[in-house]
Amino acid sequence: MNDHLGSCLCETVSFAIKGEFDSFYLCRCHRCQKDTGSAHAANLFSQSAELVWLSGLHAVTSFTLPNTRHSKSFCKLCGSALPNTHIAGLLIVPAGCLDTEISMLPTAKIFSASKAYWDAELEEIIVYEGLPE
Image 1 (spheres, rainbow, N blue to C red):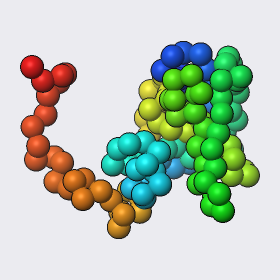
Image 2 (image 1 turned 90 degrees about the vertical axis):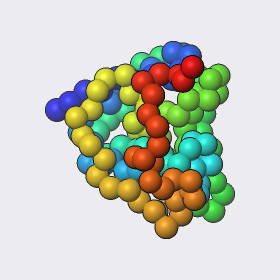
Image 3 (image 1 turned 180 degrees about the vertical axis):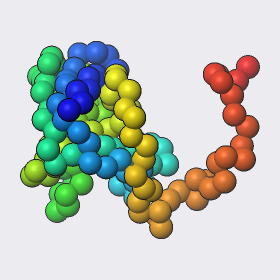
């Protein structure tokens, strides 16, 4: 059994995930684009892992889009994405909020029909190790 630790950007919220992830999806739906401000969300999913809040539970808030199952949890101080349990029996963990490495590679890209028009042929653009000068 793997344990993973994570936190928000301001480090007010910290948590542990006890257990295994079942899948790792890069979701390109319009809702996830809005959630992240990017081309896709990168979320880990588990039906058996346990989420344990270690600190900052008072700073965790959630939003569910009315009449949908689309939900996200985040730190109300810094806005960082956090684990979500609003779908019964399913833990969703944004990969970027983990402080420990995961060995799992993405399982699939989903909702690719909705991908952003600029999210094509990205491997052909210039790559910098840090901020360009």
